[in-house]
Length: 371
Image 1 (tube, rainbow, N blue to C red):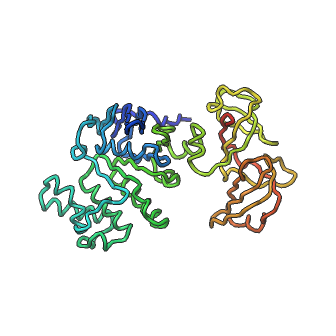
Image 2 (cartoon, helix red, strand yellow; image 1 turned 180 degrees about the vertical axis):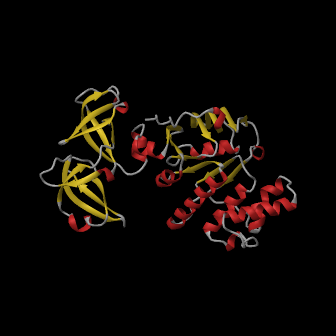
Image 3 (cartoon, rainbow, N blue to C red; image 1 turned 90 degrees about the vertical axis):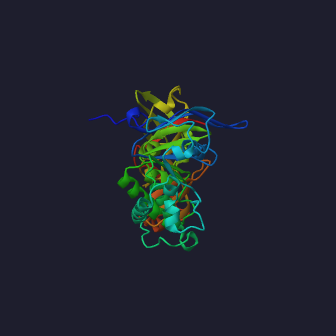
């Protein structure tokens, strides 16, 4: 069996963007602490984190809107730390799209080409191709106010792509769209990105958006990258408590460390024994209290005579179409335990007030020393 590639190791020869020891301060506040990151050519890298974590600051540093206080930035192997934005060969889509209201769609898309003094005939050809790519052919003469939110977003994307950037930067471009349109635009963006094979750095605070779109995710908090990896890595193998809590829904259950054995450890939770990665528990002694992080889809309702990790009472049901979320009150738990049950039978099978046992459906869990 071949070994899985380390998602944090990137050959400098295939790095489209390289950040080395980037630090940025605003007065007394350190917004970024010696951040280093390499983005592969053609990949979609997402910077994910809560508000104020430094992700948009990092994007603005790559774009050249801000200058770092320390560290180096390279694009396509060339150092650009002191270069102005217009010389970095980047395209950017802003959160509010930043379209020129007095210009037509075609004029907005062609703005960057005119600024680069491209010939008129070439501008017309490339604008037409960009509008075809984002499915806006026929709307060339409309003004931004005559477009829907989704159409405005496509104009902004076409304007960023028409200059043929080495790197495409996206600052929460879907945040102003409704849920259904946001989902459709995510699919279209991914298809366009793969078709053009353009290196893309995407900023969002939306975990589901990051998990569905990204080749790799850099999870950020307090100006640092807490984990870098694939969607599956950060969801199933979180590096620390912050990542485990921030990415997706999770239950935190108090358990006990029984033993460690090489790369794995065994923790006791009720009648269950759960095998978890040993790394996060380095230094914890056998018998110590640990917090077991378990995804709601990895829990199930068990029969009365089956081993359980906890027992409790169904306190709430949330119908979600393809699944039902059951919230269960547990006597010794600080918060309700969430179970995600496929289908809709849970609504009638376990009504409010039903006492149930909870078991583990898989061994997919991770533990950290008790907080």
